[in-house]
Amino acid sequence: MHDKTPDAGRLQHLRRAHLAKGDPVPLPITLASTFHLPGEPGGVHHYGRTDNPTWEAAEEALAFLEGAACVAFPSGMAAISAVIFALLKSGDRLLLPSDGYYTPRVLAERFLAGFGIAVDYRPTRSFLDGGFDGYRMVYIETPSNPGLDVCDIRAVADAAHAAGAIVVADNTTMTPFGQRPLALGVDILLSADTKAPNGHSDVLFGHVASADESIIAAIRQWRTLSGAIPGPFEAWLLHRGLETLELRFDRMCSSAQAIAERLASSGLAGEVRYPGLPGDPSHALASRQMLRYGSLIGLTLAGAEQAEAFIDGCALLQPATSFGSVHSSAERRARWGDAVAPGFVRLSIGCEPTQELWEAIDSALRAAG
Ligand SMILES: *Cc1c(COP(=O)(O)O)cnc(C)c1O
Image 1 (cartoon, rainbow, N blue to C red):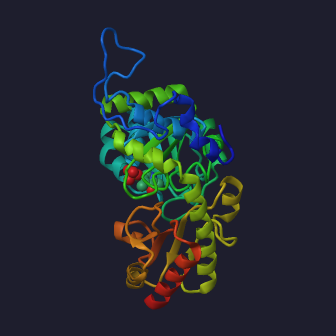
Image 2: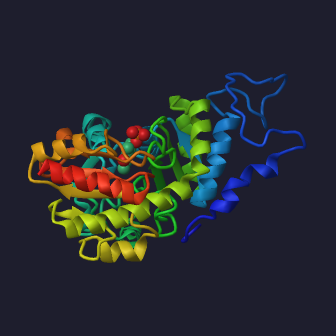
């Protein structure tokens, strides 16, 4: 399992090992629901809900990046649902972050109590406080979305394992090029590949990764039986996106560092949160456990009005939810009910040239007052 940056060069050439003379170099899309299947089934593709060559290519690339087996899903939430519903049962207790992506909390509140699964919540920054006795599953998201607090992945994994829990990490904000939770001891990694891994705001996708074969078998069985399968075209787009992930994420993180530093020293953006800023509460731990500091920046402008004027007035910021795209985007998270100030803006830095992006952000901030 990797504890360093995946080898992006080898990723570009993974398919070569499967090619016979005359085969297309880029991945073909297989849209089949049925496969030629005379006689006994087994050892080959048999039906589109069980397996598909295009998903398998996407899973092979994801597994190469994660250093562990991967199961692909049609969205990040489908991956999260698979982990929860395939691995928990009545009587179990689940610990979720109180400040992470909000949909897993809504899912838990709406459905888990009815299945006899208890759920507790804890802030990412003090996630170790209180220990993990009694939990069957401990789920972390670091840095948390949108607040960008971090928790110590190895310390959580060690303490949760000592208490008998399975440890899950949502690594969406960092990608395999920014952080390696499996190498830091978690049992299951999941990611919304809708964000930077696809990177072009045109696909929803997700995956679950684990080195534990029984976990992967259960997750795969959940996918086949629940029918939560990715579409071949989406798998093809994700596969294509992964080929440029290292290039895009490198630009995104470098630009985010430069822009966060300039925002912090400009005095125009209130409190600036970015794990790569030496004064940030996440900085020391982020420097120990992350390979990059990521592409998200948190700003707190004076109020909702200033925040909306900034977002709408910036020529190089797409007002949109979600993050990780080639296009920089921004949104005021309080509009979704996140526990943040009304003027809190989550900036997602994309692939525009750094200086041009900075000039657009700077002038929009000045105009928004
Ligand atoms: C977006 C996101 C998800 C959900 O992904 P979808 O593809 O929208 O279902 C899960 N976790 C995090 C941290 C996210 O940002």
